[in-house]
Structure formats: C-alpha cells, structure tokens
Image (tube, rainbow, N blue to C red; front, top):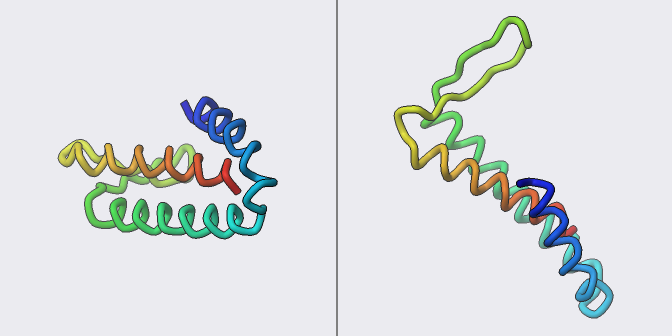
Length: 87
C-alpha cells in the first residue's frame, strides 16, 4: 500500500511542482513528516505496549488493547509516505 500511495502522490505532484515552485513542497513535506513522526512517537509511548525481540534486537509495539491508536499510527504512516512523495 505504501508503494501505491507513493506513486499516486508523486505522479499527481509532478504537474504542480514546477507551477507552484519546489520550495513550498519541500517545506510542506518536511513539516508534515515531522508532525507525523512526533504523533506516532507519542502514541507508541503512551498507548503501545513495547516488547523487546532479542533475536532481531528491536522493540515492537503492540496496540491490541486500543485499536484506534493502532489505526491512527497506520494512517499517520500513510500520511508520512504521501508527504515524502510531495517533497
């Protein structure tokens, strides 16, 4: 799904990129990406249950108890990908 969002936003962005200027899109993309990651970090810290996986040496977050937080993290991930494609 990430690849579909990336391609759709990139192809639609190509028309407006030279018309409106590249600087606005770069600033907009950076601001939206930073806001998305900030909110994902806050949701993971407050609502997610961290579980360390010793075989992969990483921490996974489980949102089993709060489905809306997991859905919000997924939606913010897609918004992050779209913002990356814009910039």
